[in-house]
Amino acid sequence: MKKHAVDKLLTKHDNLVHSDGVKIVSHTQREEGNWVLQTLMIQDCSAPFKYKRTKRFRSLEGQRVNVTYYPSVETVAGFEIEVMKVVRIKRA
Image (cartoon, rainbow, N blue to C red; front, top):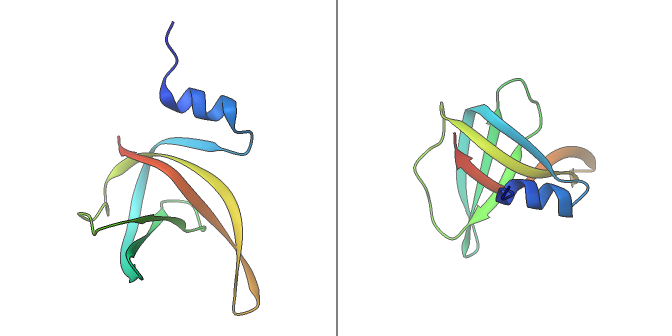
């Protein structure tokens, strides 16, 4: 049986997490140099999900997505904040 791309990623990387069919409640996009920083908030989760792309995309707000990410910590104004670094995202 052929493994899916997500299964291969999860097997290869221990800290990687995958969630299916999560609902996006907020999607913001802001310019950061030559990149556009995408920040998602997912229903029933208090940590932001972040990733960069080269251009703006249609808003994912209200959509259900499958997302693969690494838990991480960023320091903002001296406070440590849990964030999720998105590796892969697809509409469900």
